Image (tube, rainbow, N blue to C red; front, side, top):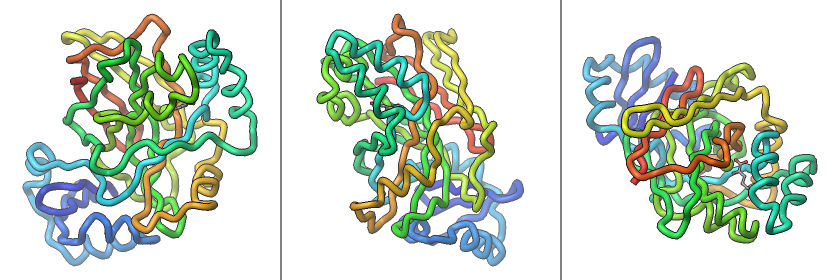
Length: 277
Ligand code: DO4
Ligand code: MG
């Protein structure tokens, strides 16, 4: 079952049918049994024939009042790329240490109002020369700390700013247009399969400029472990999203350009498409 946030309400896609509810996004996001609640809602509602049209014309980012956080260096490829980019700054050792440490790297990524949805624009910073998208599975976590949903996230990153000094991480990671989520949220009591692929494609002037894939199985940490650390000393009255890190990093010669189209697909969830402004 996939939930879409639209300008007419929350659209439930279930067994090839669409149901439009008047339940609001934040109340669903708080529920520890969002799957059961939406199933019950779908059983009381008539399917609507205009679901696909609503997705084309009325889709919103799948977020209400949730903060977006992110985990880092959860895949070997991210550790490797970051050690390389920060070599001159002498910061590489930190990435190696956090990859193996018990405590994960967690950082604040975005307030909800800065999140782009499917079809909207993401941005590269004007003061950065080396930018990449990071294709990541995003967890929807309730105020009680339960993982109830899964969506696709793009953790846009300025590699030169982060590489110059790891203390610049918030500037490399959190700015207008740095976060995209969507198109919808898979709500399920079981997580996506470990073999699920995360695929990144970048198109420039209609030609594919980069393609890379990883699998959730490549992730070093458990989802529950990341959520547990995030919730240790922090409350989330509306729940939150947690990006789980990237396992795909384009080669060092690659940087995004304005007009590029970024496509991120995760098996069983969908494809998130954004253009770079
Ligand atoms: O350590 C910096 C950020 C790491 C990150 O965003 C990732 O691994 O996905
Ligand atoms: Mg990331």
